[in-house]
Length: 166
Ligand code: ZN
Image (cartoon, rainbow, N blue to C red; front, side, top):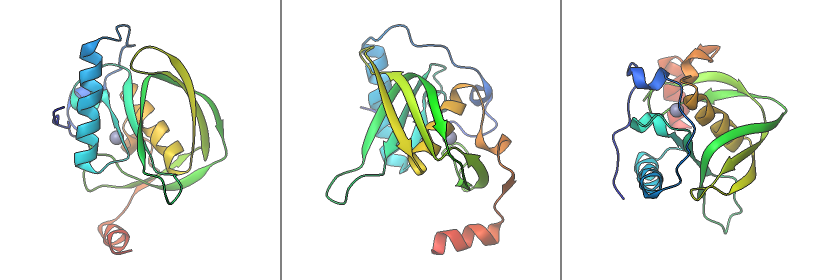
């Protein structure tokens, strides 16, 4: 596994539409392994392939809603589609490609996603709260959409400082 460079806002790759994954080959597996490593090193809750310069429909989301005696784990989603969305949450959201900035974004409270695993097998996975937010955020990346275009407003430096202290 190797850590990859995360592209930052302003790089044109981040605004492009990503193509479907059709080959579930070692190249895809290396990409997913590298994305895991990169996400872990960056301490994020999600990473999309275009953020490491690959215009393919693959994302990784960290499931943080786990029991106290369980470890958080990463979910690999290839060609993901949201098939159900319920409820609403309004809260601060950030992105590894937009470091140090947070904005208020409205998202569903609960989503169900249908995707393929690294071998092409279809599965469904559900997420609540932060995980639902991460699914939506990462899938937006596959359409070339950054959260900054969806935020009703960005947090001020004073609010950011308060957030860090809490
Ligand atoms: Zn992001």
